[in-house]
Length: 386
Image (cartoon, rainbow, N blue to C red; front, side):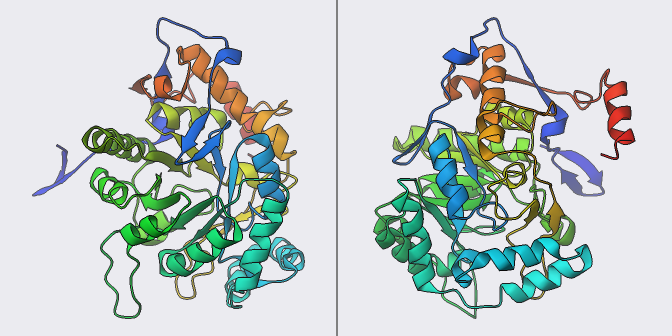
């Protein structure tokens, strides 16, 4: 089904977080009695939030703190941490560069080769602190880096690409066999990113423990503008969650859906779970933490692409500790802090006692939900230059 957009062409209407609202039912629950625990494969999290595999967000220090707080951070095995012995000076250069210089500087920085001994060293640094360790690579390097990561003690391996597919054609390199990869790995493998029902089904059939949903919604991602590709996160999450439920009924194997990108506030995260997510991955919201390596800056994972950068460096600022952002107490009133508390409070008001019940929440289309009656808030933000 779809709407006519021109002679002989139809288009389906899709929705993003700002276009929907969640509807309370006939029950409310004390937020302290709400359970937000989740499982992704064999990994159990008390906070269903993953830190995005971006160099301005995750380094060993943030990964350790994230794990202590109950979530998990994904470290990029193809980033600054694995190319440079002392990444701090490189990160400082990026944060000090002008907007005009940033993309060219980043392209140059990522030209330095990846060192496999640094992959092992960074993983062991995280594990030595008793933290959960998740790491990521692009499909082309997944087999080699997955083996290295597992041997070094990583708990989860993530394979991410702008647009993932099981059938990939290339005349320049061999393509990864995801089914074989998942079979050979003893730790959970999470694969992404996709936005459609059919692709989610195909990814689940590989044996993946989880699927990332989202193409282009991230704050530092420009894929939608540069390539014109993407599906708004509400529709994408609902479609992929439906695929998960169908796959589970067919096979008895539950594959987690992780909404990745487009969420900066507690309300966005709550909406993602209502749409069917089992967990969420966020970047810019955590890049604002004092522990984040970007020093108040955040850049997309495709920024260093040699010929066509599909990410940009953005200034997010540094607001508070990672602990405050995840579990509070909140100093700011904009929904950017105590994300776990916001999720619990939202679930309590909706009568959802756990994530499974949250996934059944009634959703309405409501484009005016963030502006209705908020004239003074809007005027204040404009006055403050926000």
